[in-house]
Image 1 (cartoon, rainbow over the protein chains, first blue to last red):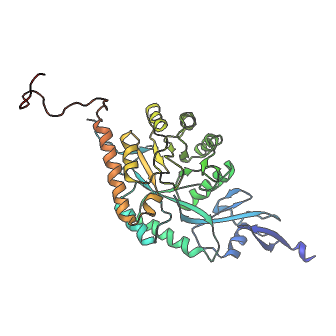
Image 2: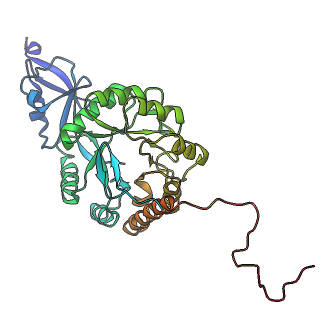
Length: 71
Length: 264
């Protein structure tokens, strides 16, 4: 019964357990990332304005990315 | 002599014809000094997975970009599929608050050669999504033409594979490309020396994008200045119009009146 109350997702390829019905905002919060950053779920960009309404599903693959140097 | 005009990309003008990468410098302070010396039109940057622990470096780089106050050109480095590139571009647009994107779609990990077969469609989708796309591509004429056909207002052929510093390995193709296409052309990747940059600018290229050649120089700041001077010199030479090379010697000093000269 407890396994129904949580879902497993991948955040930056690392497994994380989140409450069922967790949103992308919850996933961001659990990673403790400070702005600026952006997010994608299952290879689809999710704008910041939709974090709180984007409900995650089991096995979702979440990418949280931030600026780095580049050529 | 033609008069110099500023670099214009997608209707925006830039006083510099040098675009500078931000990676592989010995330290952030050296990078900042190199930017100050080169006065580039744009700075390239990227996006990578971030965790709470790694956030400090990212925040530091973000602050450096703000201090440099140069327009940022985010890239899609490392993307191997159209969807990866498009999603990365969308994330970059939100993070950097810019529609500019250097489209990199890698087709081969060993040479970092772009995926030329899928590049035009990726560019097409990004342009339709409102991006100002600067595609990293090979010097293939038909590929570059297709990129223009889908709406790219500039293209960025490589001189040589990324980070090699070999200089233009296919001068004939690069010169043909310049002759055939009228859109701004930016040589991106493979330049190692200021003379390489000067050379392509003499051929009529509109700008160059550099990173490793500056970052890995013994004195990156001095090399940034050398490249900036070379880019300007090459552009000035192109505008001045070079003489035609000749196969036979032509005396530059007048022959008439030469002392001791006589018919044999």
